Image (cartoon, rainbow, N blue to C red; front, side, top):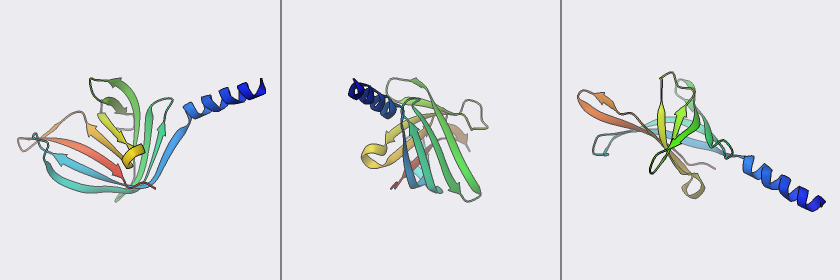
Length: 134
């Protein structure tokens, strides 16, 4: 009986555990409407990603040129292909992202901004790439 309780406790703990990825780097990628890369900009280093399986959420912190930067992403909904998250730390209302999580296989996470931006008549999309974790 004790062994069964221990197994149940271990299973419940592993389901609620957080997975941490440390010492990564971050880039901001600017794409045009044809999804061509226009520019790739280093955004941060010493990236820490904590992924919570139970809440399906990401906490991302990094050192940027002008100090600390963070994303606090909570799962919102699923469309046909990708998971949608909202950044609770954002100063913008409704700052939504698609997440392409390749952390287990490739040690990479992509956040694709839901809304596009129009700059000088050109429609642009921002993608954040986090990689090179230990």
